[in-house]
Amino acid sequence: MPTPGCETFNTESFIHEGHEVKHGYHYMLVINEKFRKIDEPLLPIGCISYQVDESGKQLFVKTDYSYQDYHLRKASKKLE
Image (tube, rainbow, N blue to C red; front, side, top):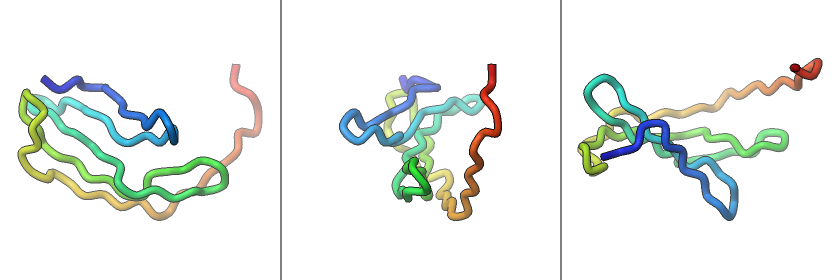
């Protein structure tokens, strides 16, 4: 069974490759496919989500996202 909330990080590059979530009665696998370096962090600019069954098998593409317009702000003060 998929593990909702499970995050996948590449341990060599430290890139967030994807995560699993549960939406009501079904599970989704979200895979970050494209990345862009903005200032210092490497951010996902394209991802695809699949509906998966209880064994984690990909059933079909649910959504295909593209993020192009990031605006990063630096914190003005330290949060306590």
